Length: 261
Length: 356
Image (cartoon, rainbow over all chains, first blue to last red; front, top):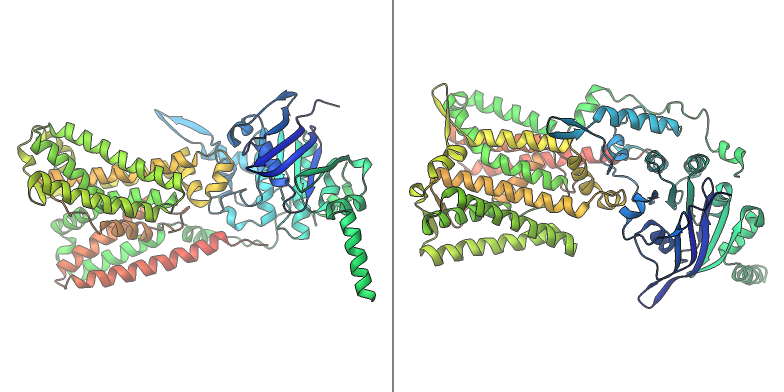
């Protein structure tokens, strides 16, 4: 097994007196998908904010390719090759597809003393990069707002892959999508993985996660309920753990009692 | 490994084939998507209308008059359009034209400074106020509308208070005799003779501002960032766009434009009223909106704003040529603004409509 791209060892994070994350450990390997699962408030967002450089951890260690790191900003994480695609912050709807694709990394060419955006190159590259991921758009000049939710996520994923991300963090990429759209997005997640990226997939849908995941980190109230390899855990067990395990059994028992009685 | 059949099943029929539900957009659809199209049609309409009903409108003198009226408004409208595309407002822009002119005039007439040196200092003053506006908006997260409303009143108070303290009146004049007035006046307030009629140099500044702003917006990296910070600041920040820096720069740009217009005015009229510029800030915003800028940011055009200012100038002077009462100007203004907002709103829906 190659060296892990990203490794969390006993990671912890407090917001004032609130312990948002405590003693969480997992690894992200190249060519594998690490899924982070949990209910609302489980600490998923806190974990990815630490991984993406938006927040800094208070306890434990974060290792990038074997050496301890502490990212001061999302920009710094990006420079290490850690790209994050947020569910609602993936794209700028009123801007064209190619402008979105190159946002923050615009290709420039010189005209005398001026440096201007190389439109031709940008448009061609966008079309090619999207086609490589199997996304065919008739017109990359159209505003991203005219794309569907799934296509927007795919655009953001294709962008991260194109700009050489080593680690791709996806925050609930399928949460707001219909069944078919979610399937399309998962297909690109699998493609990014097959290209050798380490993918971190945040989800509260165990069915989606189990489809593409290699490793499952289940969080609950800021703590890790365990990090399982794919062959160690079944979909049913994953669903049960996520839903609250023993609590769910209790709830089922209670409801059954009432329903019949 | 993932279950490949499950993943493949999600693809639907023939992945990669063009979606059969997508209609061709056609030339018309593309044209409608241009933000400045509405303004251009409006300008043509106004031009034809006043050319038909008055004789002077098309005469060289008439053209020089309405171009002149449009020019200073246009310089401001272009800068305000950039700021609005970046998602912010600047209500202090109008009064800034007076503040900078006052600073220049006082330094040159009271302290006997060279006009160029006075201009340099008033430029520094303008940029500092712009940076302050931007810094405050970004630091506090308050709407720029309210922050710049504060700066607007503060500057207005300063303009009146300081002018009265220094001169005992509410105007500063006498810059004509200051050293450097001739050369500065040549750059900012001279006229060019075309076909026997004098055209103000401010027209060239207006055109220049529109061209430069357009190139920056559409062809430079900064322009891409301006659209992004106005359209979705969070998304822009997530991909590494320096949102704060870009927005502060935009506030400084409107302040710079305010300085340019203030300079043109003081050198041309050689005196400045302390209450000048009040109320103009809304005209700048209206011109930008007529030119296709969305009030919510992220969309618009610098050329459109320049054309919006042209419509303004043509109507204002056209009404004079037609010997109508000036009150009709405001009716026209209101109707034009409502029309522009409705058109813009329709476009926005079009652009943001997701097909699901």
